[in-house]
Each structure stands twice: as structure tokens, then as C-alpha cells.
Amino acid sequence: MSLFRFLSLPLRAPLLLVLFGVAIFLGHHWSIESEHLIALQKVPPSLFWTVEVLQSLVIVLICTMPDLLLRQLSMLMASSRVLSLIATLLLVIMVGLYLLSLSLLSDVLILASATLLARLDLTRIKVMPPPQVMAFWLAAVVLVGIWLGQDLPNPLASAVAVVAT
Image (cartoon, rainbow, N blue to C red; front, side, top):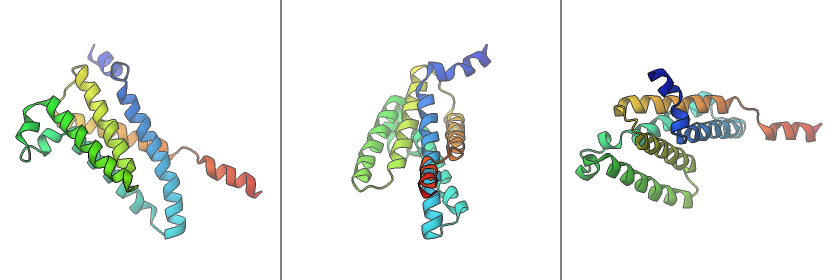
């Protein structure tokens, strides 16, 4: 019975599928971006992917465990899961809008919002494992999505190849 509940989780919490779709999109976007950075600025691919994956893991960790990470900073946030989610979501949106106006870190805002919405959806259906377990599983969803998105073909490279021939 618990296996069925686990397998039906994406149907009961559809924002998990949105998080997975965002991870696929970001993996594809980063694979296209990495081609340009490797060709133009001689950035090693291993360094680029290490930074992007580490950035993704930090975002998931911060968005999944704000009450544990920010307990010393704010007792109000640690007093309630709902207040923690709302305060973190507002903080991410405000900082994200500022960074978007600078055209910086838009990927961070997108991934953080999708992670917080997936966590909120899981809370809505009363699936609340310990924060470390939730962080592990959400990070797994994001990393698998990035890995699948990285392997998608680049449509611009195909178009350029057709025009060049």
C-alpha cells in the first residue's frame, strides 16, 4: 500500500512534476550555455557543471530546510511550517526580483520557486517527512531532471548545421 502511495505522489502533488520539468529545462539551458562558455571563454566543462549542480543542491537545501537553517536567525520562522514557507517564499521572490532587474541569477529564482511550490504542495497533501529526507528526494528529482535535460538535443545547433550546409 505504501508503494502505491509513493508511486501516486506526482499525481497527488502535481507541482513535483513542475519541479521536474523546471529541472529538465534548466539542464537543457545549461547544456546550451556550456557550449558557448567552452567555445568562447575556455571554461572547462567539469568546472561549469560542478558549479551549476552545486548551485542547484544549495538552492534545494535552503528551500527545503529553511526552518533548520535559519532557526538562529528568526524564531518566528521556526515556530511554524506555514510561516516558514511563506517567509522563505517572500524572501526568495523579493531577492529574486531584485536580481532579475539586474539580469542575474534568474535560474536561481526559477528553481527556488519551483522547489518551494513543490514543498508547499507536499505539505498540502500532508506528506511531511523529516527535512533531511525531503531535501534528499527533492535534490534527487532536480538532479535527475538536470541530467535528462542535459542530454536533450540542441535545436539551434541543428538549425545552424542546416544553414551552414
